[in-house]
Length: 378
Image (cartoon, rainbow, N blue to C red; front, side, top):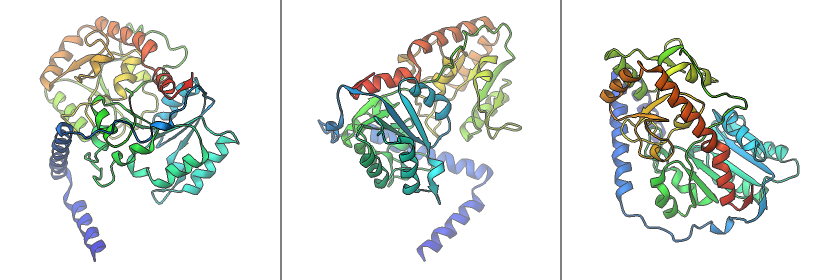
């Protein structure tokens, strides 16, 4: 009876939640989780002085072979080549070992066994949404590898407590952090929350991959003035509509926009555009900012990037010289009106960001620090 009632409610939601009604419902849900997150963030945190898995860290160990387990979207083109420059790296896309939306542990075991070919992995990186994590996965990895297990979450504000759209408070990321030997997070404010759940925290902003031979940008005439690249999520659609309503012509690229599809290689679009727009909010939110992969991918390959202000960006970029930031739709329009008349200034910003990224912001830079923290000889 309970299952029938749940099915009926699901069908009713499907029929009713469309168009403006859906948009309004989503905004109400998002505002609710934003408030939940802020309450948790400001509440007292009980900290464990020593993470429960502190003894797992090894010292003076050679780094020979790495394994990545992920729901592959960008990792193969961005993360894999960077880690492969440090050690031999294999990647398992979780989609190839799914059965009815559940991980088939037998398939995963066979896949990992074939990749290891007798030599166990020095370390394993798991970058998965909490819905794919389970006890069997951790047990299988531990039984077949003696090296540290690294977890990575680049959307903690939505996923850690299970507050975000599509998340489940009962099945959040927080319950798994003690199972990793090191947790990589792009949110500085979450250190205490990881440690209070028995996890070892490591602050890891996103990085990027710069292809070998990519030259410093030297675009004399940009092919387009202003563009946004990314799938057509609701908050992004609202921003672009607002800009167009105010007379700002923005070209859009990516899945969901009229006449567009998934873009496999974004570099040419970024470099050929004078001003690349960014929207730096946590998944679904329109108020909570977070570091995004785009905050490094776009400026890092030599593009002029204009995105939402985030206090953590100040620690990685020289704002105004390497990356541009806005705090409101009004300020965004003002900055676009100013910089679209100054293509040479945009080019200088792109050059400065490209130079900084080569020296500080690749995924190889990030993971060399991570592996040294884990005691590897890198």
